[in-house]
Length: 592
View 1 (cartoon, rainbow, N blue to C red):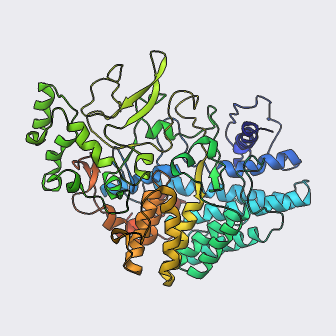
View 2 (view 1 turned 45 degrees about the vertical axis):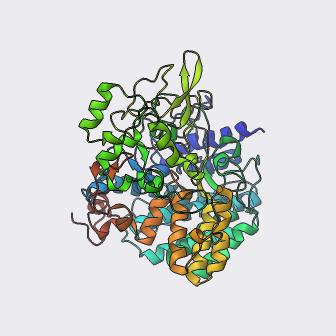
View 3 (view 1 turned 90 degrees about the vertical axis):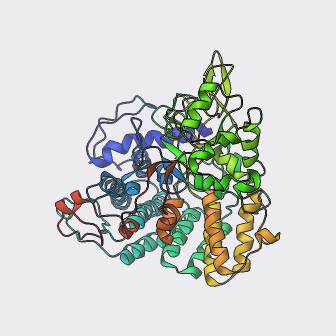
């Protein structure tokens, strides 16, 4: 069975049971036209094949929020808009208007509990109904406990205490009060501990294995380690991360190539959402993170935050400083700084328009403006240009006149067509940093803009290594933590800690800041940084400082951010859920 066939089987089964497990809804399966109308909730799990498909349906729920009609805000990568990225239009969380009636709260609650109940259904039927071989059922049972743990993990990250259900959905037993945050963590740990204790669950799968994409002991150790990080039980987190390494996971040699489809099953990939470049079964990153010059003419709904770009160090590990490249840059107002981003040889009309916006045109270089700003992004941490399309860099995009074209990101935009080939966005009246990671090149890598085939990493080994470093540092083992951070920095190609005066670590507090910076630099567009900031309770200081908001590249604020209050660190229990279940108490600070 080849690679595509493996993923086809996985995703076809997921499509089948989408309706079966929820006991309602229509079924759309573009990979298999055979009629499954005879498969009902009563007969599901009654054959070995239906057992396989039932398990696939639990994994299918990982694609929470998947939508081809507009971004839901709930796919994992879309959470990056809160920290390392930005949404082009703002969000209720950022504008200070969120209430318990916000659809984000209710939709995420429903998404995750759907995953819980699918896992509960699988756990029950694997033990009571399925005729599959005992070894297979034992492995699947461990996988499903991992999946239930994952969905409860996600619930507890944001709601911090939710009702625990461990049996298939019973309509007469839905009105439970919330369990405490600690009780939910205890249940997650219990499920994961039982998963790693299962002899039939492998430590990891090699690339090409027909079961790649299913949970493993390595994934269970990694997720349990994450729970211990929330609990600040550093020694147990460290032990679990060591077990992940012992399972055979390691860093992929090159950062940029890690996110190519050819390398999605590398030894760095611990657990991921399976995608296939087939209509209806792929990722949406192209659609919502691309540009009009990307194949499919995409929407740049999600952007890169200027603060992230400014935070990328120089290649030698020293801090980046605008004034070292463009003297006097920081003394200008954001509006005045636009001058440094203007293209060479502006027309008189373009000069007049820029001056009208406040650009300090006395500093304009008609024949060298582009070269000056390009120097800002040269000799930086290589992850910057792997993650971000920066001004006057190029991007291989869609087919025009019979060939894929190489576009250049210029300001102001004139024309997408040859010979100009400016990179075009749907926000062309504003100049924003654009995503490069998970945005496909050319016109042959995916069938349409909503069907990217690159698997989306939920847990990868670099995440484990940096959490391991964090736990060691919190224990006071700064030297050991530095060695781990340097594994990630070494792979990235940026100056190692303690290799120069600029990278010398001053102690535990300094390393804590450096580890947090390292995670920001490593994980853009992966939906990790937002949950880090909630765990550390640093979101307010890092993002909601005075004068910040959705910003153009030079710092002009388009939508200002407003901090609603510290209740943002714990999401509101959805109003609709409290109306349906009066036993659910509300989190502190949220007013209905």
